[in-house]
Image (tube, rainbow, N blue to C red; front, side, top):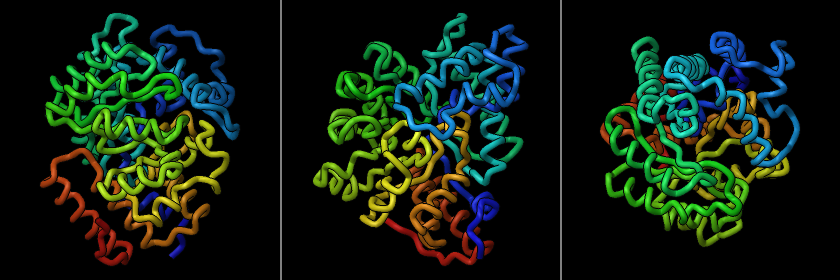
Length: 351
């Protein structure tokens, strides 16, 4: 069986780490700019792509975050948010994704008067339509921003509580790590955890394992976004492993943000060999110019993973999803049956 891109596109997958505002279609950027009279640096499609993607160069997390400036200008109306939410779900569904958690920060979409609550309702409408039309499962993760005040994070956490069971499945802390420690946002996570809401934090991407330590022990993270620096603290790594905390790994993005110097130096395979619950994700379809199937192909070509390895990684993704235990068991059961019937992968699941 040839493990090529087409093969990975057929595999049923979960996408746990994908930013809405970093995953627009180029054609949608052109269309929204025209409809909303927002000037673009160019209307040439190929040239525009260079403005909103990293390409092959290695920059920094701050450089990477800078690529969101233009998409955010276009996502300041409920109509735009609903549209891109639907299109994102459609794009990943066509790539074999059966469940996606879409993350974004409502506070970044209030420039022209839309409230944070209205933005959540708009994203939910788009995802709900995709669920009906396509059959994909979806959830929303609300992001606090490290570099924005902890008071704003607390307000966003309160919104997450309000929209619990109404589309929102988790709460995140994103943005530049250095000089913006997670512990400053503890009050927001206290509210989140005391309302039984799942948490995931960007950590160990551009800063060391202390960032991961804070995410887990100050903010109660159930999953870690990226976690590339975890291996620098073996005791903490064993804690993550022992407690089955999940790493949301984004290979291409980690190279783009200089979290790792190259794909070959990425610790993904090391974590996998240690038994850590690792998942593969895109981070941003547009900014990193990737798809989840492409990330799987990269993992195969870089680390020599086998079909059985991908079975484990696929199941990890569904196991770590922020859906109820009973629903998760049903979804995993269906996925395992499909892997066995369609691809001949034995019914074997990891812890």
